[in-house]
Length: 168
Image (cartoon, helix red, strand yellow):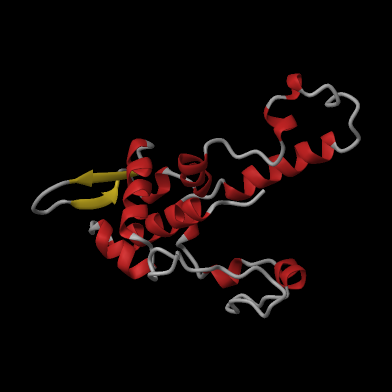
């Protein structure tokens, strides 16, 4: 399972708006290095989910639709991705003939519960302290990346949106 670039950008957009307040989508796109057109689609999805509020015209822009305590990282991701499941059998166990006998099924259920629990953090909590201070030591061991390291060839590296940088 991989959170899509669109969901990643949605999180970055909400963080930016939470930090600076009412702003324009163009400003968020510029600061975050996201294609304005792509961000416009994301903003629409977040507004439909009740996370962002949009207003056209003078004094318009985008803002949070409710206080940062009122929504979670999981809600932002699911506003873009839909329900987050690590395997189809967890979403519809009745459609999986092996769910009752599969030795992996209970472990997948546990992983699913832990994933949802880990992402069920409000944006108030998310922004309360520096991200690097919350990384568990096992993250660095598993990825080979230090908290402020963008990758050393061994861990996951975030890539820029090609549309925002003029790429293909």
